Length: 253
Image 1: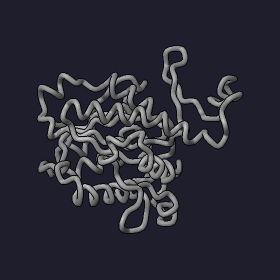
Image 2: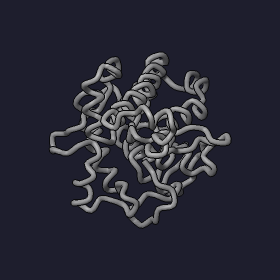
Image 3: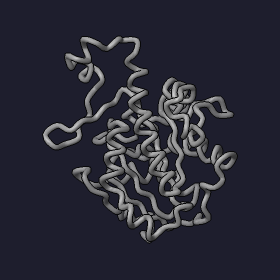
């Protein structure tokens, strides 16, 4: 989750390297003990775009030769189902659901009450694809949803039945959801762009880590130190490659 161009302050992680270092990925990296983080994402993009980036940017041969598969974890945060990407003039472009539904064949046939569910069925294809990739390579897989309704639908639908055991719950013991925006607003843990700020992402990652300690202990590693390697598309422009961050607060391995 990120927003390019948003104003940055001490608590807002939304300027290139700041976003990655203060965001949920690095927060989980530190708390779970992973030495290397590859952060792939683009503001307002879809799960389809996330899959495209994953397939285009990840060096599968390097991972297979350099890392024990048990120490490789793919964490997928499934974005809003009404986001869609397609290539326009060679560039993957986000299309709003309103624009997508204006295509004549969709406009003339799409039932309004089925839009959200149809989008979720599309998402399930990408979740299953990433789950299958992890399963085939003996990597760990864990995923969660940004939307409560989306999360409940996926839990009760057979479209992702095979990989539902790897899904994070949408409700936690403290009574909040995975990304509790109203709670974060109340606690002033929201950045100017309406994404969680650094404290908000820290709160979210604490819930995730608590769940992992209870039910997915195999995801916890022993490299709890201050040396981390972070690669990200967020610090690269344009977002067609991965860039290694060189922030002075963290020592590259």
